[in-house]
Structure formats: structure tokens, C-alpha cells
Length: 112
Image (cartoon, rainbow, N blue to C red):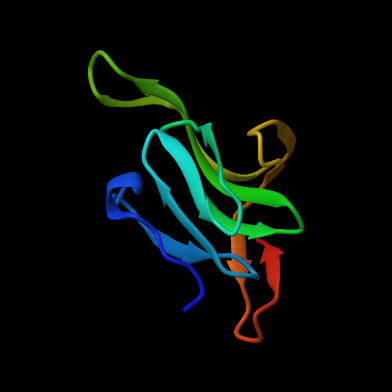
């Protein structure tokens, strides 16, 4: 056994294991890490955690510019893109890079 978690203390929504090492996490409006360290931070509704490595959390964020919320449609200026957001364990923004995080078959990560 590696660890034991009390089901009453864990948000089961999107519960998963990620990272170069084993991290047990869940995410909803808030990102929560339960193991091996306990930390949490708020994240945007357009952000999803992809990877944890070297004391950093890597999120994928999608951006839609030029969306008409009132009519629920694209405008002529519509632009969709993704970016990789790097945060520390307190949720502080460290960097943002255009692109998306991808993993090669050999396990290495790169930004496309």
C-alpha cells in the first residue's frame, strides 16, 4: 500500500493519478492534490490540469476570443487557441505559453 485516503475527505469528481511521480488529485472549480503533498488552488473554468513535475503544475487553458455570449455564436473576430499555464503549488502563475502540452510515446512531454 502506498497511501490510504478517507473517502469522506476526497472529492471523487475527476479523481485521478497524474504526474511524473504519483500524485492523487481531483479538480472541479478548484484543483486539489491529496498525495504525496496536500495543496489546493482555484482555477479557471477553461483550465484543466495536465501534468505535475518538478514542483510545478501544468494546466491546459482554452481561449475563445470574439464569442457573442448574448447570441451564443461566433463573431467575425472569433479566435480559438490553447495555452499551457504553469503554476506553483500555491496556484501562483509562473508562465503562459501558446500551444498545448503533448506526451510522446517515449514518455517525454513537449508543447505543440
